[in-house]
Amino acid sequence: MLNKQINIELQDTQWQFEYVDHDRNIARAIVYDENGLFYFVRVERDDDFGKATLIETSGGGVEIGEDLQTAIQRELKEELGISVEIICKIGVVSDYYNLIHRHNINNYFLCKVKSFGEKNLTLDEIESFHLSTLKLTYDEAVREYENRANTRLGTLIANRELPILQRAKEIIDDSQK
Image 1 (cartoon, rainbow, N blue to C red):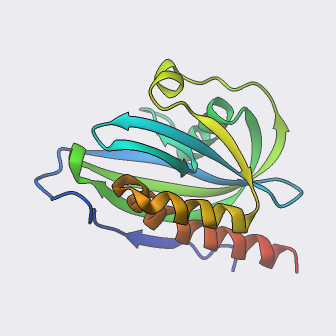
Image 2 (cartoon, helix red, strand yellow):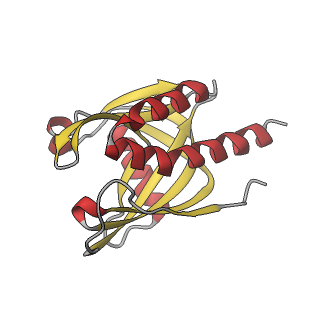
Image 3 (cartoon, rainbow, N blue to C red):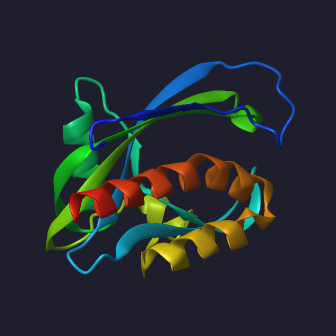
């Protein structure tokens, strides 16, 4: 069951579709530790998408010439300050942000914390998104996603990430049997 990847295709139900002018290849992770706690980023934004406080998996754009595993290791070190063991690829979620005419190809990995260190956030992540770390149980994370789906962007993120979080929990539970 560990290698059964999921693939999800989602549409943006919050903003009217006009056109897509770019694709963004993204590496994201469900991160957990030896105590079964999960790590996410809290995002506080006030931009074209509106004012919102959100929960999101850590991750970001894959740089030119970078493979997905290298990208996720880099992103997790930057945003959460952690080194991880990549357990497996969970799957891919294809979704859209109609407001900015973007198609997102989100590649999700399940990662286990190996060690903690210093974050290396960009100026934009600090000043525009006010990124911080959330450490939650599975049930707390589900509630947080559900509570943060009260904005249009929060709805898109919850639709994308809750099925991935559920699949990650299944993989973790299966590995502990």
